[in-house]
Length: 109
Image (tube, rainbow, N blue to C red; front, top):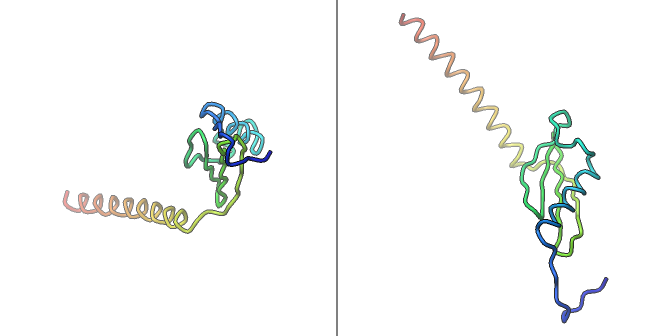
C-alpha cells in the first residue's frame, strides 16, 4: 500500500487499536500472559501502545495510525535497573531502621 501526500489519512479508532494490541500480545505471549505465573508486568499501556517487562526483558507493542502492530524486544534500561536497586535499598534501610527502633525501645523498657 502506497500513501500519496494527497491521500487523506483515516486513522484507526482507539477501540480497534486496543483490540489489535491485545491480539498481538496474546499471539506473542499466549492466552494466559497476564497471570501471575508468567511473570509479565504491564509497565505502561494505552489504546495504541503497551510496555511489558519480565526480568531483564522489555516488550514494546505499538499500533500505528494505519493499524499495523510493531513489536520491539529490548533489555531493561539502566534507569530501570537503578530504580530496582534503589527500591531494594530503601526496603532494606527501612527494615534496618525498624529493627534499630525496636532495640532502642526494648532497652528503654
